Image 1: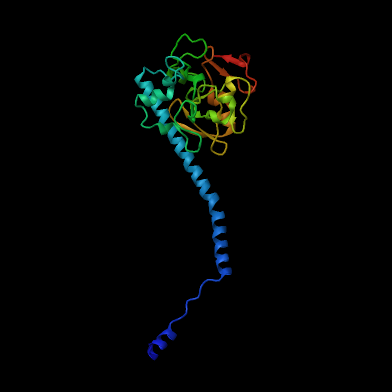
Image 2: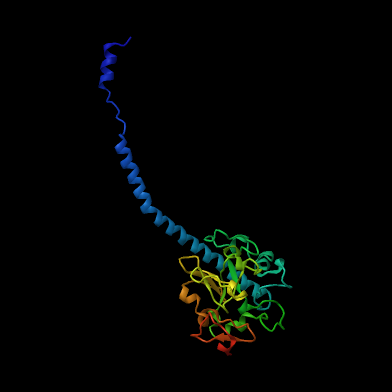
Length: 266
């Protein structure tokens, strides 16, 4: 049985009041507004971090290529080794010979479809610069030495590796047999330029994943983030020199209507 003292103590304690429904709705609304304000900033920060990681991946690949050159008397990587075999492609050569510590280096973190594989890699080799194969008698793309490239017009500024597109993005790309390649002869930059239906050169596009920009690595090992206008500037950034001799594209030619009559021999 309660004493009078117990009743006095109970009366002295303040009563807790619950939030009203209106107050809860106001709080939820404020939280929703704050989230809507913060999400774009968080998304932009995440994209920026992924772009930085992508550039780091390409820098590691570029430096691995420099180490490869040092070990192989200055020769550059070629697209394929010992024929068209999936075990003999440039990225497997770098990884299997210990130039790179992880297969993840070949995957841009901004590419949800990317993984280590012949049709899903997210970086491509500019084989029109370095060569399609080890065959020095190849009339189209024989292997070259880095010193040869560096002596040519804009040689140090030639893109060797850039972001590329996995096969899954277009049925036109499923039978191209190599995701890890870019072809600046017919230069397309996805997603601004659509995947063309005009033969193999059209289906090796550069992938501009970072707000229409793409990371690219150069012969001397440095990496840059390039805009669309820079990426389509063949004369200053690509200079494919490995098609039927040492060549470079004339500035001002239409990259979508390429033919060999529009080229100067150097």
